[in-house]
Image 1: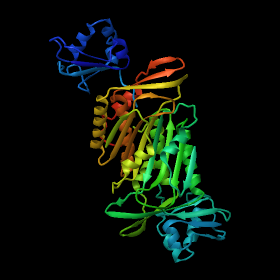
Image 2: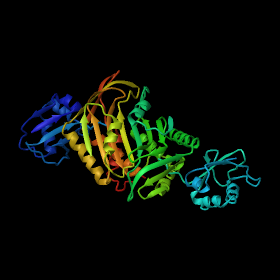
Image 3: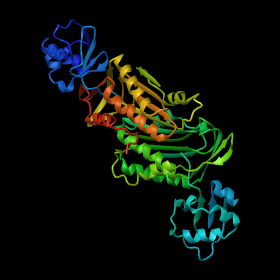
Image 4: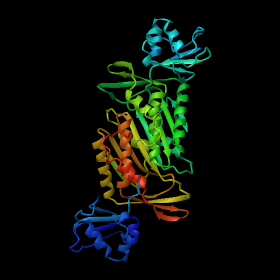
Length: 83
Length: 83
Length: 158
Length: 158
């Protein structure tokens, strides 16, 4: 899957985007986030406070039980501040 | 006093403005309007329906008991339709 | 805080720039209302609109409306332009702009300006249509929109 | 119905004219919101603003907001422009315009567009100030302003 990072989530993780293959146990947003936190201290740090991290799957906001698979484009970012 | 007329009140009365001296009994908006209606059929016609005639004294909207004297600028017109 | 009663057209961008220029301020939100001459009124095609007004009283009433807006929503910057004379379909008639720090104030105050202008400013429209010429009647919706501000102590429309 | 996500500035008058031109329509009211880069945030002077966004998702979210507005308030004409990149105090950031027959609809729909844009469109502001550089935090007021449209069945804000 393709994962994109924006704003301070990007800074903390140290990447703007990456293409990875998630393990089999990752099948929805909740399991995706649980797996991401194990990928290193930079990931754990960026995702430490779930209240201020938003997730989009294929460019739509997604809730915890939204399905995720390896063909998806997933994005992690803070609450938006445009306008 | 100077009296101004606008929109269809002007058309019905047939004047845009006039300077007149009101009789002594005219001392407020109510007595002014009562007097005006007696000034001719064009005045009576223009003022026949008080619900759709507005009055301003010295360029402010005025209610029935607002004082009027011969130094005032008085205006009669329909409900406004600007904007 | 400015009022223009004029026969000439206006340029919204230029007015907005002037209103917000050189303020060294905290202005982040600008809401503007532009009223246009409609082409079609009900079933009828409009050919022209003649706008009459009461010089002197117009400026006085607009200034009162603007002053009340500044009393309710301070600090704001405001501009009102209203045209008179002969206009045609698509022409701009009126402009109200409010600039403020945040948008809730700008929306509320701009709506207040135009709602009150509609019932208080002494303008009268005469429509020339394919069916003939007539003076426009006032709208009950406009009276209601203006009156609701009288009972409103909060700036929140909800 | 149009959306532009661009680094270039925009001209409000030109956009308004284009939105309302050639409609042979009943458009009489145009409400627009313009967001500007503020000079002063609290006690701090802003020197520049860097606007990051998520290309693709931005357009998708703005289109969804616009479509919902057209569902709620038909018929209307709408335009959304949002800039990205490096901006400076006083610069225009965002524009939402709604043109309609009457002003109540135009005000409500324009406010809806910007309220929802603030919480849904994936933009992030980084402020460069005399005190340093930081990412802007989201405002709780924005969440409330956006959420209130979810429970609103009427177009009347009262």
